[in-house]
Amino acid sequence: MNKRILVRCAALVLLAVTAAAVNLPGNPLYGGSRKTAATGSSVGEILPDFSVSCLDGSIFTLSEQRGETVVVNLWATWCAPCVKELPHFDRLLREHGDDTAVLAVHCDPVTEDVEAWLAGYDYGFPVALAGGRALADLLGGGDVLPRTVVISPDGTVLYNAAGSVDYETLLRLTGHGE
Image (cartoon, rainbow, N blue to C red):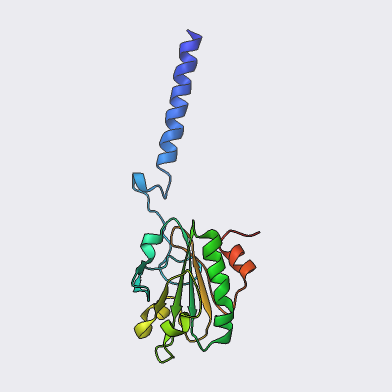
């Protein structure tokens, strides 16, 4: 008899704990409201989806990169710090391309022929032109170059800043370093 009472009490306690847990505020399955991150290009925000045509004829779509860390670099051929850091992005892609995507966005529509300039290099990342500046504006602007934006596999902006980065910094920002 005592064993039956003990089993019933345990079942009631389990039922009470379950009922309390599922009715906690914020549980979306049971009417609670779930807080979602704001959209935008600031750290902690969810970057809105975008698609851009690349010079190689491909289309880069952010939402198709879900599950990967995405690194977007805003640059220009005339920007010496930009040119100096491009090999770091290429190395990151070559060494960690299984879970990291890289997109280089050239931000100056009145510069020399970007394709001709790139012909002297063997970069593995896609390059897009920020025609109409819409993409550069979405990412926080292309007025100060270079700019690096790192987006987590779920679309959250982890880093967005103007200024040069080195390879070790890229490793750290993308979770591949210490």
